[in-house]
Length: 204
Image (cartoon, rainbow, N blue to C red; front, top):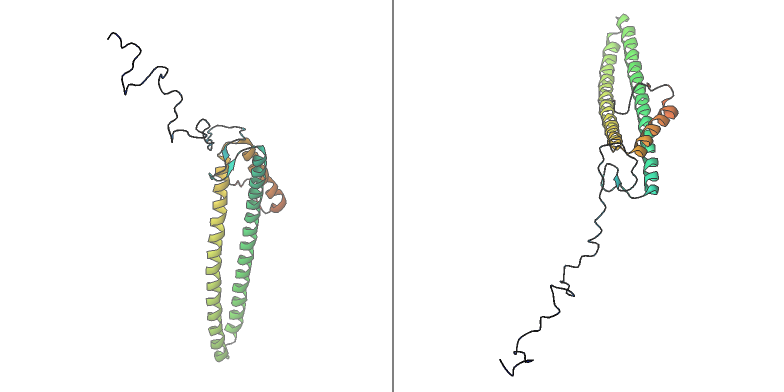
């Protein structure tokens, strides 16, 4: 309309210079650290020498740098060596129990044989037989206790063995070397001829 040039209608807005949403930030949409995703545990199925973002079995055991990798390798080395020590200790303990049981059985058989020849001491033999029964009950109880302890020790060894196997399955060269060296060191120091060289960590 003539004479109305340069006039703007009330309520009209000047949209010039506003293309899109420049200069506007939506509240709640500004996410700090959105450009940098969180570091997650990397799962490798091939041999690698990775140092960053390596998790050892558990997500909480997360390696971020070379220093943490070195500490983790030392820990794995000690656990592998301790596994060999536990194997030697369990074998020695079982040998002690077996020898003690054999000695008690042989003592009982010797005493029973001596009293079997003495026919005239029937009263003493009856009393001794009662004591033998008590000794047998004690021996059975000890054997049952030893069986339970053997099972507990075996379960602990199996748990450590499978844990070391999972560490090896990270396919990380540093952790694999730490596991092998720890097992070899433990066999050398604690084995002392009691462990067979053919026996591996995964064998129970």
